[in-house]
Structure formats: C-alpha cells, structure tokens
Length: 181
Image (cartoon, rainbow, N blue to C red; front, side):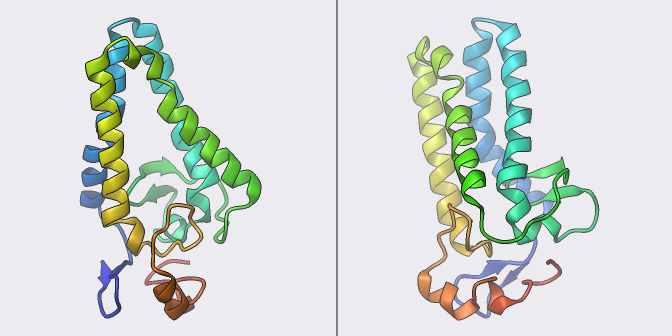
C-alpha cells in the first residue's frame, strides 16, 4: 500500500478500509446537517441529498480526474480515500488543475459546506457539532493523508517541497507509484 523506503510513505493504492475510515470522519458533517434540515423539512433533506450527489460528481469532474489514483484501478469506478464507488464519467486528465477547474472546485466546496448553514443556525448545538466535525475532517485529512499523496498539484497537497523535488513533478520519481498512470 505504501512505499516506506522514502521519507513520508506515499500511498500506492487505497483499500476499502481506507474509504470506510474516511467516510466515518467525513460523514459526520453531512449526518449532522441532515439532522438539522430534517427538523424543518423532509423535502429539503431530499434536495440536500441530491445536492450531495451533484457535489460528488463535481468533485470527480474538477479534482479527481486530474489525480493519478483516478486511473489507477481498472474498471469504471473511482477507488480512493475520499471517493469509493462513483463512476469515472470523466476522461482522466492527469496533471495540474486548470484555472476553471480550480475555481469550480472551490466554488463547489464553498456551496457544499455552506448549504446547510441556515438550518444549522436554527439549532446552535448542531451548528457547533457541524463546524467542529468539519474542523476535525480537515485536520485529519491534512495530518494523515495530504502529506503523503502523490497528486502534487492538488490544491490540498501537503507533501514537503524537498520531497517533491526528490521525487520529481509526477511523484514517486516521475513514475506511477505502482500500478497507476
């Protein structure tokens, strides 16, 4: 799974257990948001769930398709730490995100995290839990994943500059880090 012969132990692949761990941490904000919205309107819960599906598609379109992991596994489904199961609707485009993709990615993230704020503001305890769980999600991904991801051009990547230079622009010495493109 990891190449630990180098500093930072970079991932070669992701397993279902990686996704389940990520889902556990990342699912809390969505669950809390759904609780807050459900207290007011089940119709808005359905709209929020539909939005989350669109959000997942946008993340695949504007971020995932640029990643080496996107094309790593054979088949038509994405398998990585944050996404397990969405179809690879979009043609892989390994390499840096363009300006449009970057702007759209940040826009979708801003919409995604702010969508439930109205309903959460009606229930301050849930708002605090939501904001705290987002903080834990971001901290956890940065601490345990982003510093060892081979997608160096991801806006969230935290691999050290020294290691990036050592491994080359494509990561893992310019290679595929095992099994991927």
